[in-house]
Image (cartoon, rainbow, N blue to C red):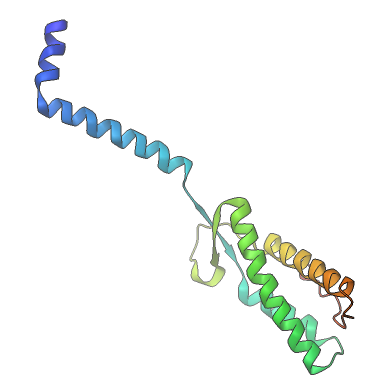
Length: 138
């Protein structure tokens, strides 16, 4: 038994193979723990829904432009928050053929919460907000 171990120790090929296998095992475990999943988000549908709901509201052109800007920032922040919270990459739904779960409704809810929070902060800061609430989840 000890003679076999000595021969294996002295064999550089076997030693190298053991090192390579150990490194592969460590990398495999690391990659599994740090793997990132992907989800999809329907940007086009979300923007269409927002545009449709905003068009139904009576507001000045400047208020509509401000609302659109706020929405764009909230959408960017909402997607980022979702990605960080769930450790995923968010892909545009139209760019994915299949295989990734759709997170559109959940991300829309995050965006809506951000819009409401930002609206409250604006109104508490003394500036009267003429923006009406737009529901994204429906």
